[in-house]
Length: 271
Image (cartoon, rainbow, N blue to C red):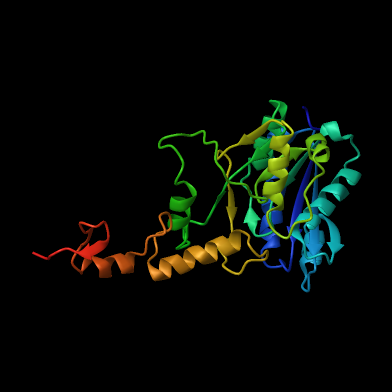
């Protein structure tokens, strides 16, 4: 595939504060030398916004779709449909990339997806990182990369994020696009692509920086995951194993518990 158009879709709900940084990062990515001759269309879907999200998007030069669906899956789909309508190209020449309003893509993000599309990949599923200054960065990375083989640059990871996702327009249409789900629409799309046999690249080579905020815009989404991890940090529960450090310290101060002759637990004698 040799895309002539890259359509970037950003759903947003009351994001006037963080959206400008996201769009600035996208504009930087769109100016990458590798995109010479490729048109970039950016669409912001202002979903049930009560603030200046739409105005901020227009000031940044993005196309704006307004809706009151309050549904991330439907909002993303509306944005993709609008972008494809405005692309002026057939589906075989369009690559769709999605990110989030609270995330900032790296300068080479679009160039990376374009290169993978030219290699024949039909979808690129990327990873996310948190700012280094966030107290959640280390526990997030520990839990997030728990299954990553040590010392590997290429990682066929299990994660899916709408903040770092790309797909050919033809493959997107083939599976019906983002389903109208309140959460998990990104994972459902990727699962549908894999079921249909499309070439899906899961890679950690071009991560997107996302917000560490704990007040989630979408219930059950990444913000809820961070909030749960923050509660674990306060209570001392291990981010990966789920073990409660405070409880283990308390138990450790007691005589050890061992199985008795009948297989039931009984207190062992202390030295």
